[in-house]
Amino acid sequence: MNFFKRGLLSITRRKGKSLILLAVLFILGNVIAGAISISQATANVEESIKERLGTGATLELDYEALDSMEESEMMNLEIPNLGEDLINQIGELPYVKYYDYNTTAFLASEEIESYNPMMEEAEGEVEMEGMGPQFQLKGVNYAPLLDIEEGKSELVDGRVFTDEEIENGTPVAIISKKLADLNNLQVGDTFSLSNEIYEYSESGEEEVLDSRDVPLEVIGIFEPKTVNSDTENPEEFDYMDMDFQNTIYVANELVSQEMEFSVGDMPEYEDYYVPFFVLNEPEDAEAFEEEVSPLLPDLFIVRHASDSYDSIASPIESMSNLSKYVLIASVITTILIIGLVVLLFLRDRKRELGIYLSLGESRMRVVGQIITEVLIISIIGMTLSLFTGNLLAQTVSDSLIDNDNNQSEEEIYYTEMQTDLTTEDVIDAYEVNLTGDFILLFYAVGIITILLSTVIPLIYIIRLNPKKIMM
Image 1 (cartoon, rainbow, N blue to C red):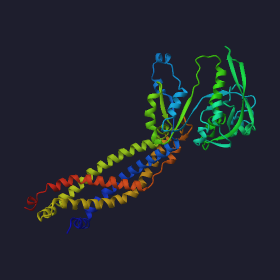
Image 2: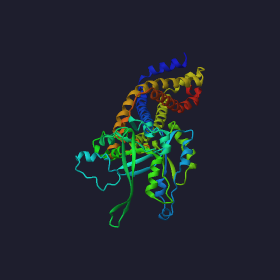
Image 3: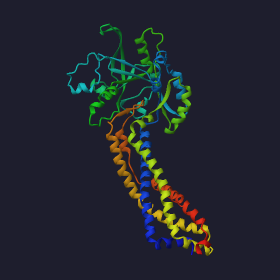
């Protein structure tokens, strides 16, 4: 009779001990299955959320380094500017799909009214005096408009810029739909902003020293898609929405011309650009940062859109870390417990094993029989725990998420790429599923753990002396 058949007979004849081993494996299998299930679910969330955050990257000051500086260092600090040449050099790297850099100016207007949701609620009773310039003139260098290309905004009417308009600073603009509706503006219409230079007296009163009109033709109308208004407190989003709706896209050259008028003869003035790079793949982020970092001036760093994941995913991250510790602990515990249980059972079968060896059975075949017995029971126990462990993971993770989420207020985090995600979005993306990858990983971890747990019993079998046993 071969050792495999002997193993099957041994399992059926020793039903009590087989059931004990099965029960131990079932309990430990639940823990391992739950830990792997949570670990895979958190990994899927991270992949999904980072994909939603996009592949954007920007260059910004290292504010942590600035905060750590002494006051004397800050007094003598000169922060360098990111020039167009450097931005274009970085934009030509093979990791970059497309890029843009923006400069901004804030202008007022007596001809058109700015969008203000608080004004709508107050039915015109609120005065807007003393609030300063209401419109953000956002310069762009990428003619197709990066926000539209990335799906942050939707072009609902008209067109985007041409390369010639960007290069020449042609006075054409793309405005928001709410701003257009509020002022009855359509594609082809012209409106005027006012670039004013103020002087403030000691009493705080402002006086307009000079001003000039900035006429703009509407060539396109966009609708922002980045502000989430589905919340119990929509007023929290009013200011964010107002900023988006009052943004007017124009060419960088046009903004530069207006800034030059505002600063007059100030010799040290330079255009300040904020660059945005959209990478080809999320996997390019690390290589992009390694290549760009040496090119940057001091105190500048690369910031990726996906960096905000850690800020909004604290409940998921805490579960991910916990599941790793539980998995490691459960594997070690399984190796020790199963190893000791099998060893105790083998001591009761010492005479049986001695007979096999005395009859000329090789030690390797005896070892094969024991491994067969353990693996058969293990596979049955693992299969049973596969489903219950998955349900356990769902129950435990729901409880942990609720506890963690209730301890902190919901916040919205905006990346430099204007992507908004909340902790609630991350939690909604979390889902424990019984997938094929999970099943394969669970059986792989389980079988390897069981094989490692048989090391102690195998040493016991190898050291058996059949002559002493049979005496």
